Amino acid sequence: MKKFRDDRNWKQFHNPKDMALSLSLEAAEVLEHFQWKNGAEIEAYIETHKRDVGEELSDVLYWVLLMSHDLGIDVVKAFEEKMKKNEEKYPIEKAKDKHTKYKEL
Amino acid sequence: MKKFRDDRNWKQFHNPKDMALSLSLEAAEVLEHFQWKNGAEIEAYIETHKRDVGEELSDVLYWVLLMSHDLGIDVVKAFEEKMKKNEEKYPIEKAKDKHTKYKEL
Amino acid sequence: MKKFRDDRNWKQFHNPKDMALSLSLEAAEVLEHFQWKNGAEIEAYIETHKRDVGEELSDVLYWVLLMSHDLGIDVVKAFEEKMKKNEEKYPIEKAKDKHTKYKEL
Amino acid sequence: MKKFRDDRNWKQFHNPKDMALSLSLEAAEVLEHFQWKNGAEIEAYIETHKRDVGEELSDVLYWVLLMSHDLGIDVVKAFEEKMKKNEEKYPIEKAKDKHTKYKEL
Image (cartoon, rainbow over all chains, first blue to last red; front, side):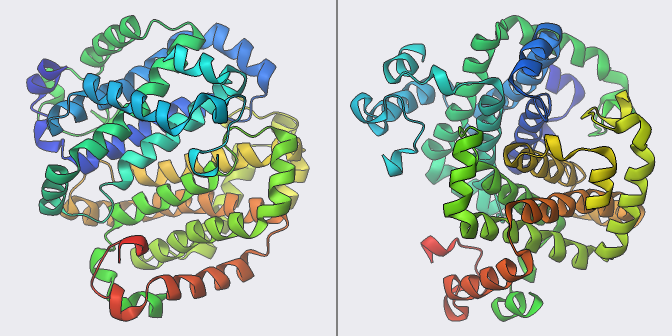
């Protein structure tokens, strides 16, 4: 990932704001695959477009990893900590079977 | 990650459209940290908010991993394939020092 | 709108990139209202949250209008031209009853 | 706008979630125009791409207006109310020359 960037001398463009912006644009590209489709259409679509969706998810992952690297964030550790925090924000007995935000639980 | 979800019985809500939508919303939360700030402000901000940004990036990563799992996508393999594809879309000699999209290279 | 901004001396922050970023963040706030909810839940939600959704849509509208103003775009004219273009991109006989993108029609 | 939709019989697809999703995707398309560009590049870009940016802003406006219509929201009234609310959330004496969110003012 870093070699890919260094070979192209792209670090000069990778300021945090533009990287976050790119992350957001790639997430929109994932979302676009599901626009206007109902449940059955989405199921059929995924069967035939798994590779395309996988590519878009990879683009999102790329920016998660590269941003974490550049900002000095240990993303594995951050992820584990966030999961612990989520377990506290969403206690099983309160959150079970609900899609309510933690503030409203 | 799956245990967290199963304990809360949340799979019932996790259709692809809403997961992609959530991915997009979490990416927006990363982006919000950099809104209105210039380069120097962002640098100072990251020093004091590394943990917060790491949490938001973890939320994005959570949906990348969970979506990949649910849609039957091997995200590590997808990522490697996408990196190869990017190397072809952005040949070093053409892409070096440019932030141009591959279609316009 | 301009008086609101001038009273606060905020034009200094309103570069195109940050305005577009803000537009995107406000659109995400509209979207968040519908996250995880199914059709019936959304219908009930709108009944009780019409004002909230209206506020978020207003925030999006705010940036559409302010960006247009700052970039020297006549948004009414641009809108009329885009509607005409859409009529050509989506001819009735081809587009009727389909949610297909024009490239694939 | 409504005639455009009715001619194509598209109301069947326009549930609130997909409309909000579309609003968000169109806002991302506005944002994409400014990705990776610095201040001077953006200024030059706008000179030559005013029509393109105007089209994307029109697409955002389209969904603001159509969503408002379908959800029974008077968007002009909502906008005026939101501007009043913003004036209270951001009092001039506190907000002047600052890009701080109202919660942190």
